[in-house]
Image (cartoon, rainbow, N blue to C red; front, top):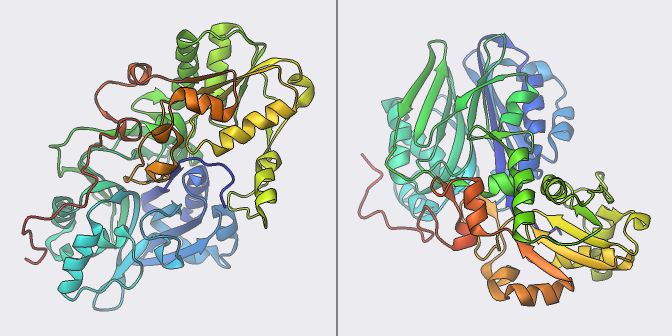
Length: 471
C-alpha cells in the first residue's frame, strides 16, 4: 500500500537530440532522475544510434534500473527519449512500461513514444483500430492507442501522422517521440501537462516535463512547448508546427500545488515562490495565534515558510522524513500499516510539547494521513493543533493523468469543513480559497477540475460521430 494518501502524477518524459554523438546514457540518467518524483514505479529509455532505435525498460527507480545495464555503450547515440512511470490507464504491468515502440515490415523499430497524461476515449479508438486488424501486443495502455494511430499514418510524414492523432484522441498528453532521424515533442491543445524545451552549451536540444530536468543536464531553458504545438528536431534544426490551437489553455493547477519540483519554473514563475505565496495568502485568510509553524515534508514546507514570514510565527523543520522508505512499502497487518506514517514522518517532541502548533500540508485527499499526522502531534504533547491545507478542498477525481481516489473516498466530497475538523480532531481547519488560488495563478488558463468538477475535457468517453480511422 502507499503510505501517504496523495494524488499521484502519472509520469515524466525526457528527450535529447544532437547532431553529433553524445554521452546520451549519462544525460538520460541525469534527466530522468530529476523527474523521478513524477513516477517511481518503473522507467524506460529509447536510444537512436545510426538510424537504429534500441530500448531498455525496467521496474524500479532510475538509478537502480540504469545500474542493471551491463554495457552502457549499447545505449549511446545522438538522440534518446525516456520515461518515469506511475500507472493510471493500463494498470501496473511490465508491458505498460514506456517508451512503447513500433516496428516496420523489416522488423526494425522505427518510432518510440513516451506519454505523460491520460486519454478519455482510448477504449473506443482501440476497438476501431482492432476492428481494422491492428494488434495491440505491447500493452493495454492509452499510449499504445496514440502510437498505433501515428504508426498507421506515418507514411504521410510525421506532421500528418501526429495531426491525425490529434484529430482523434481526447484528453491530456505531453509526449516525446523518437523516429529514425528525429526527436519529436508535442502537447495537447489544452496544455494540461507541462513540457519545456532547452539547449546545452554543446547544442544538444533537451525536452523535459519540467525545467528541473533541463537543469540536471545543464541545459538553458528556451521556452515551453505551446498547447497544440509539435516540434521536430533533427539535423535540419528545430521546426514548429501548430497542429491544433482552438482549445482553452488549461494547465493543471496541481502542478504548482504539489506535483512539480519546487526548483522548477512554470509559465515563467517559480514553483517554490508560488508555494511560499500560498502561505502568505493563508495568513491573510486566517491569522492564527500559535507558537510554531510546521510544514509537512516536502511540498508543505514552502507554504509553511510563507505563513511564518507573513505572521512572524517561527517556522521549525521538526517533522523529520525518512527518505529511505520506498513508496511501495507493504506492511503485513493493519496495525503495522497504521504505524507506517510514524516510520516515514516523526516529530522532534521537545519542539512541540506544550506548544500551539500549525501544521501546513499541500492538500487533504482522503484525510486518513492527515488524521494520523494530527495524532502524532497529539502524542507529542501539542497544546493546540491548527491544520492548514495549501489548496482548496478536493471534491472530484481527476481523469487527465493523475491517480486520484474515487469521489466517495475524497473526504471533502462527503463532509463539510466543520465535519472534517471534527474528524481530524483539530482546533481549527483552513483551506486555501479558490479566489486566492486563482489570484496566485490566473483566472483563465488553468484546470481546477479537482476543486470544481469543471474540466477542460468531457470526462465521459465521447463517441467519434462516425469518424473512421481508416483512410
